[in-house]
Length: 221
Ligand SMILES: Nc1ncnc2c1ncn2[C@@H]1O[C@H](COP(=O)(O)OP(=O)(O)OP(=O)(O)O)[C@@H](O)[C@H]1O
Ligand SMILES: [Mg+2]
Image (spheres, rainbow, N blue to C red):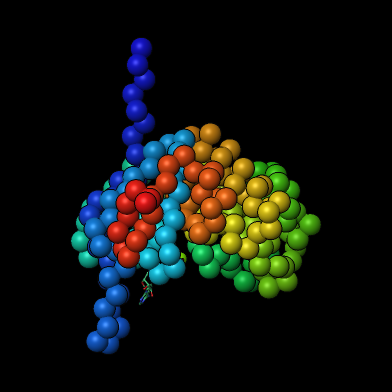
């Protein structure tokens, strides 16, 4: 029996997004098509300012495209819980008033299932080397540790779709390996990941590569 190709968890086509400030208009996305399927890590490279973070912002519902279609299997992006869609933003997005542990467990707390996920949160913190920082606040840990906190938080509920923006930007080689292995394990368990990165080494861990050039996503040159 031939098994059917898995369906994409997100499918976007012809996305356009511009930013206007006074007389200036920046066309950050100029007709982007993208999709990712369960089990797959899609890597996206591209120069600084080419539109990579804007694409993730549109895919997660933070930004609204002016044109194009966006379909998540779980529903409208903005309404999706962390179990459907999780993001590791380039700016990490930790809540400064919560401890490292509370940040990691936040997705479970939002669905009132903290107790159920406490053990998994502890496992992720150990794997990502932040377990000893559990009671500290984000401004009391290093940038790399903050980033690994954001990654643990995103993985907590085993989301259907994981969007990660420069996930190794603040990691040394050893921790970059751990972070990338955690995405591989996530994808092998059926997750779908879009990873934006400048790092060749990180992109080597992707199953498929696309390149963003001035708001256009295509096959790398
Ligand atoms: N809120 C905003 N207002 C105006 N311009 C913006 C805004 N956000 C992004 N831009 C512009 O849109 C373009 C794409 O930005 P984006 O952050 O998506 O780039 P990027 O590929 O993620 O870059 P980097 O690799 O430096 O993170 C850039 O020219 C940027 O200056
Ligand atoms: Mg960016």
